[in-house]
Amino acid sequence: MNKICILFLFFLSGCETTSGLSYYSHYQKCSLTETSISKINQCAKESRFNYIAEKKQKGSSDYVKGGVGDRFMMWSDLLAEQVKNKEVSDTKARMILIDKMAQIDRYYTGRQLEASRDAFNAINSLPKPQNCTTTLYGNTAHTSCY
Image 1 (cartoon, one colour):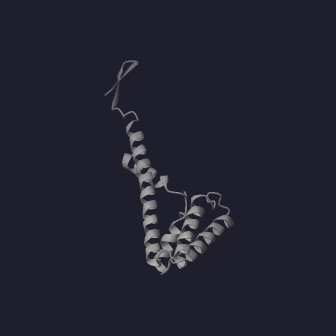
Image 2: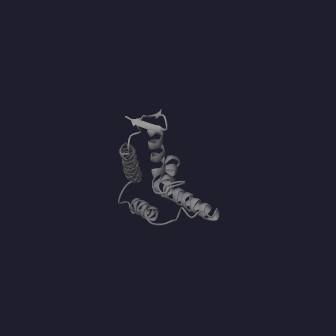
Image 3: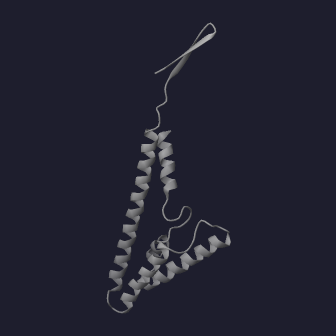
């Protein structure tokens, strides 16, 4: 039972969004199909904006555009601008993007593991169940636990 609770809490811990896609998952998906950083950015922005619009249209209040997702998008745009200005090659920019996404994955995996460890410790700190037996002596009940 403890293992089931830990797994359940592990999946609840999630990442930036509690339900749905994280801000950088759009970039991960597009980096698999597109061949340049500018196309990856264009694809990811369209995907992210469409996703946000769809969530809003369905009346979801659990996903709000902004914060970390917008900063990541701006960072990726600046990376594409460096390619355009020939400050960095397109191949190098894609490698930088892949490395950044791997860093984010490691960060969120670490947070999930930490949440799982905290849940495990919380469960282990609960009082242990005891085996109790009750014996009746006339009108008196005597309970022994060990």
